[in-house]
Image (cartoon, rainbow, N blue to C red; front, top):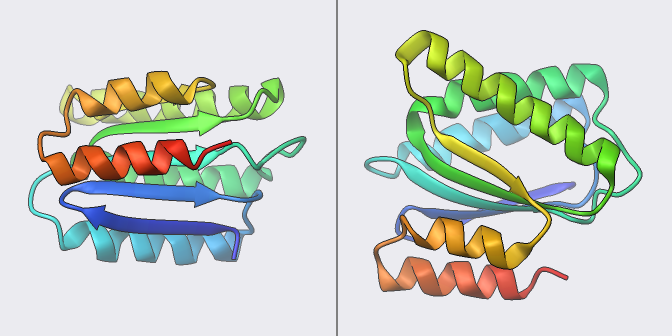
Length: 149
């Protein structure tokens, strides 16, 4: 499996992607996200690690599937920080997905979740910690960030 999605504490989620996904994996990931997010009252905060995805891009149909996922999750997400490797092409592809999802949210509701990509894991941690109010959530965020290499 190319991805994991865990909810270790409160409304905090951690996700890891090891490689680009297939269209079938996007469908499975979308179902898992919907199932896990439905259990959480209110909005969620997500830290995703995509540093292992190097020298790869999402296939166009996979990127479209991921964009559909981001758009459908817009109402449920408060913040998402994605920690990426230095690969510029992949970074730009992810940035475009985040921008397109935000544009869709703005046009439909006038507001949307804050999603950002980072190359610096400490900046991602600081940005997410601003909205994580429970000590257990902040501790799990710190633990997750510390495992990113």
